[in-house]
Amino acid sequence: MASSYHNSDYQSIRLIDMNADQLKALIKNTVQDCINEIQPQEKTIEQDEFLTTKEAALFLKEAVQTIYQKVRAKELPYMKRSKRLYFSKKELIQHLKQGRVKTNAELREEVKNQSAKKKKGGRK
Image 1 (cartoon, rainbow, N blue to C red):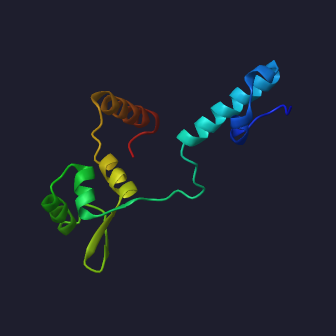
Image 2 (image 1 turned 135 degrees about the vertical axis):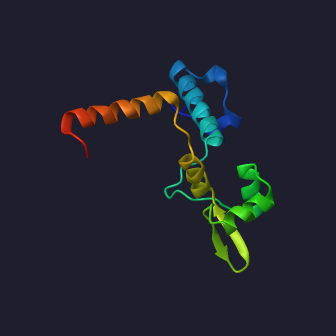
């Protein structure tokens, strides 16, 4: 009997005929197969997802009309092909992160660092 088992062997396996090492190998392979099914395969090239105006509105939790207004005001990053607008999901996330408001603790730390620089090297 072989020392390791794979999915194709499952039909013909009799657990009674296995020794401890063979049973361990069977369990290990079965668990690894399950993990491989659950986890998406890693892509070598990271792909961006492109959204339509409606999808971008849903993603940003805004009305479609608001998306059009922000595009017109050049407040959102977008691409235009023919008469259609497309939005990079990565760029929309980056855009949202740029609007992040600092916490009071972060602001205090920033002021503290600026004060330390002024004391150390004078005004800049």
